[in-house]
Image (cartoon, rainbow, N blue to C red):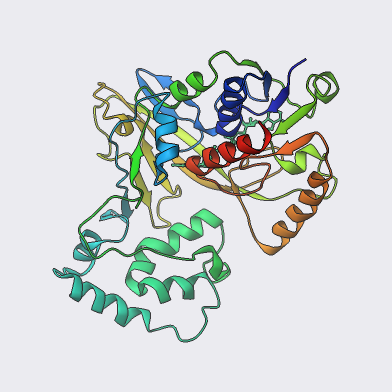
Length: 363
Ligand code: FDA
């Protein structure tokens, strides 16, 4: 018997397991995949850590969270500065003075601001769709070259059919600053994310290749309390219907060269290239290997049974989630947490914040 059974060895499950052990209690983790770490997991090839489930950059403004992860692993000084490729023209992201200079040749922030404001006024009244929303925030040029087709590839539909709420803000910076995030702390674990995961799991028993929903009878009595971090609809055997996601397909290539694209993240913002991003993993860790691995990321329609990446938080899915949530609140010995159980996109720092607050309540 254990004090807790944790379903899922993603960041949520691993931080929670570490805290449970630290508080003198016992736990067992079961994990459906054949490896631990959830979506942070990296595959190592020729000394390069390949972010198997999409690029992960740790960033936070929460000093408690930053100090927390730094107990387990050192972080490098990687700063995410993606580049947008629009039909072979390269633009710095996020939208900043370097982007504006390339677009219009503006040299002062005042000139760039004037240009954007003149283009924003094209839309009058409340934006009716994502296209109108984006133009009202950044004007037509940035929208046409850097947002429209990228967003359409991501969502698989026209920006005119997408709701305005998907884009709430589009940060525009009138400085020559290519740092994608505004957070105080940022970096990649030295030695890769697996090092962080293994340190969190030190001394914790984990059974991999075990899907709780298949082996429920064997495991449910192993602990008086279960923490479930898988998809909430799967826990209830989809009895109310499937929650929908956008999915991703990855195609990784090896190149016999030191440096393929000169940056870790390149966004392809036009339809002429079918993938949305290409990731050159070695740049996350300033790798000097003689070879390199590049992953093309394709945005795909999700079908039940495939990996779930981005929740579709529209009205229909939000209402369905609320119904599952009502069932979950009636459970006496099961708690639900993490991005899949809460049907919410969370960054890694938010997941850690949530676990630490849960720990304060239950331990
Ligand atoms: P996660 O999905 O990682 O773990 C859940 C685990 O439960 C999985 O291992 C799964 O196999 C297991 N499981 C599910 N059902 C089960 C069952 N029935 N039985 C047993 N096991 C089961 N964040 C950030 O801060 N910076 C970034 O750059 C990125 N980048 C990024 C890219 C992409 C493409 C995505 C989709 C997400 C990000 N994120 C991110 C977010 C980050 O991935 C997220 O915060 C964490 O993975 C959340 O950890 P969880 O443990 O909640 O879920």
